Length: 471
Ligand SMILES: [Zn+2]
Image: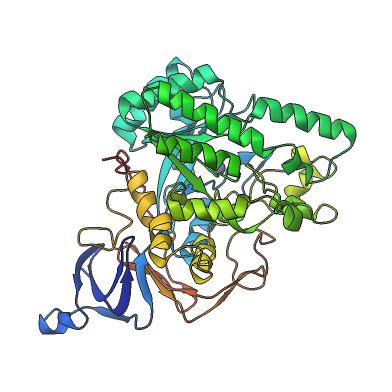
């Protein structure tokens, strides 16, 4: 087995930092040693990586991606290959993507399709959540089967997108009861889609068809209301663990915080786009430009306090995890499907490559601590979603490591750092006071010296256990 020794770095965990050397044996972290201790113990390595002046942290875990997702007559532009290579470039060593069951399709058949898309094509490890878009006897049975046999322990439901992915309150309750029995997690897209569809139709009828109306027809109140309703249903269903995805609104965050104070098993996720981008500065850009930033939940106005509240929520653990909801579409031919009608713009922003970078900038600006960066981007995602061997630099864990250089810089943009299969960047021109230096996936170096040196097919499917966050 190949032995790698990472020397002289500052090892940062969710709970602190200390200088030390990391010994990797094959695919696993074998030991954490005091600096220089390996030589004294007569431990030799095949390869030594000098991390002097750098941070050594667990590889990023992005638990919300949509590679090759069919949406609105097109498909997300990153394949599992291009998307996981871009993820590696961004210091990410595991993604959890969503297999999709739509209304009137079979969970087992759709999951098989997702396995087919991903198998042999990933540069880093991957797992799946299952979207349940049609709750009925058969899909409920399938949920239990997936927990017991397939390593899929989390199920996403939609309170939006009627006719495609939407579940009514009765269906949501039944799925939650099922998850309560099996110990699985329910993930919720919490927006009142029935009311939103009325607002969308009214807006189009009035001639208000520009991209910015995508946000104006999905008001924050509709995110807050749905979040509240999801929490009440989860409580009734036996306090099933409930994870609200891609939160963008203060109204929704208040509901999650109140539920947590009441002792409920409710968790929040946000994404970099909601921390950094806004209705005015991005979605409302002149002409059709704003289509690049059409995603749901939508970007919110900067004249309210959403962004400040989300950062505060991250500090207070009201938001446990930052993921990307990576769902890239090219501007040309894809976003353009909605020219003259914002409701036909495919929903999604690409960001899998930039989450570690963008959140690190929050460390530089003092919004979160270095440890909180590690916790929200790697350690908690692993614990929340049962990735039992990931998310920590500790003996016995998978050797998924990001070496981060705080003394270097990253410029994000289509002609700068950009490896996702998109013809634009949602974060064009952003500059980060730090840089991905070296990325190691299960003991194999996949990025170093500004070069991807990994292999497509290296990434393995990871069967997940139940959430460890509550135990
Ligand atoms: Zn999503």
